[in-house]
Image 1: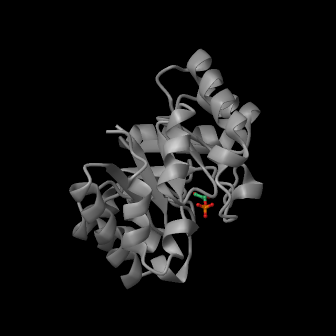
Image 2: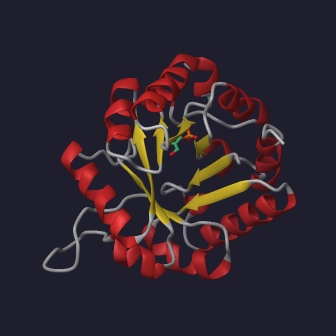
Length: 222
Ligand code: G3P
């Protein structure tokens, strides 16, 4: 089933009360159009959102540390307790070193959380897939926030990522992101072999977020 992951980032339109409201819209869309949606709010909003909606709530980042003497870190256990069921790791706007990515994956796995490791090209997709996350999401950084969809501007990064992951770790699913906004962008992404999309500004900054999501889901294969 196609997975649509909406990253709330730190946009004003998806912070605090607005984050809860947007998560409710995502839940409505998931129910009304029978699509699988996950929301990715800021950490401080996870608890309120997970008490309000039943769709999966992911964190934007998780550290590979456990209980103990660590300050300013985000543990998988605390995310789980707040109601998150997974986390992004290594988003382009929150890059990690390879060893840290591995530690974050291990921490998520130990907590029973799903992980989406973000990558910027085919080579890093290969490296991420070899660590065995649930998903790899390839997003060319130059297209992030551009409104120019990766599925049209750089289809090869998606098809080559899908091929590479199939060879290295066939159980890992590939998402793609950057500039995805409309149903046709999503449809193109699915035709390139991705299992879904990771997106943000096209929905969050839209005048009418619900309408923007309704447009997006027209691209889902039934
Ligand atoms: O995490 C999704 C993201 O980086 C893509 O952002 O605004 O291009 O959809 P956007």
